[in-house]
Length: 285
Length: 317
Image (tube, rainbow over all chains, first blue to last red):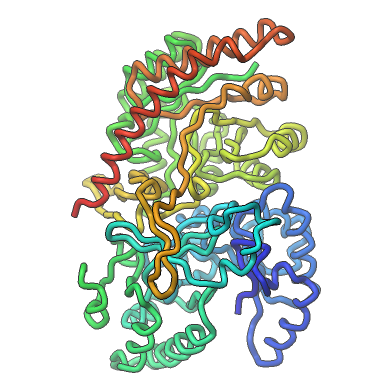
């Protein structure tokens, strides 16, 4: 489980901000046999760096298994501290090539999540050549952009009464044929990335780290989508024939009011769906 | 003194920029910069532009600032090797892996970390310095205090965009355009092309500049006509400050503007910088404002037209 949000420090319940809560939640996850990662801000300004340094120390002291890092300056801070926690490069770190991943590896990264635009074919080359784990987003909203001003507020953050409640609610941006989701300082895909029917290929390609993105989603979303993928991945790893269960497909559809897509995995526009089972949710394909 | 760096989207624009006083001009290698090919240059044109720059005692900088596919890396070296052999030494890159590899291959190259690197703090600047960059482009909204610290502590050159675009998101950290319209093809040389992705050498369709509504979970309208800011700015007022604080390069973006407009912009900044340096104590901005306003009006008109075309194109099937 990845704790915290990369978008905003003011989100209520953000573990990356409430440092005193980290030891307790990390312990609980470890007791449950889970790993605990802590995300760092995606776009830390100079003034944010002292907090980032404290966050790195707190995550290390709490026994976190890794830090998710989106900013190369933050990776450097972790390296300067002697790498007290392994680094995972996040979606905004702009990993496109195996050469970039190797530079990050040499700076302490053990895992990378390539930019959303990187296809599965490219990810396979990257994994093979760079000597790092590659994390594949298999389900959830695709991060499309990050900013450092909240666009859900009409007043400055410090004075707007809607902060931090505004980003707990669901907000879509709609125009023409396009739907995006905004979380204030982040722009996410409107459709949900879904690779359920493609899992056997991912396993065959050698990928071993799969992410279900549930940030800014409900508890039901996280538990039901997570359970479907746990079962589907177990089936995919078992080998043999693999057919999409109706109950997995139902869960995916139910939690994706704006439809499903599979991002850039197959070299197409991020909102298209390539497949044979779930594409009925995307009549434009 | 700060270098004035201008855009060269064609040989004609390169000449216009140099002739109007640019100290350096950047051009994009076809398929390898953050614009589509009509604003980029092939190797023969780049070599010709570099020759023109040398004859005028100026610098030509070549942008290979896409974030490419791993499979394109050999093509990157083939292309940069050829330009290196022709005497080109100045490059603008984004991918830290390519940066380090090119520096190892040709240690006398001068590498600048592109605006696509989104360098927003001093540690970022240091990371790219370690990757081989001798100069970094400040993120468009970087505050002056951070600029001062980078200049004082990082030991790396600093480039500031005085004429550019501030996107809704952080430039270099946005894939909104490719999410809506994207394509992928491999040409005969093995080069990948990704129309719709500025990060990958395609085009930003500026979909953020369309009219958006914000709706809630139930589809109820919360706000209509939401504006996602993506503004072209013109920071003439900051130039005295940038000069005073030792900023190394003052940069004007705009390969997509018309050649005469680029020429006027370069001439305006050249004259302003020279006037400021000539008499720093007596320098006042006011006399410059009317000339600046006319250029801004013409720039905005060209940009509006371009934006409408791009949004329209993004809706094409």
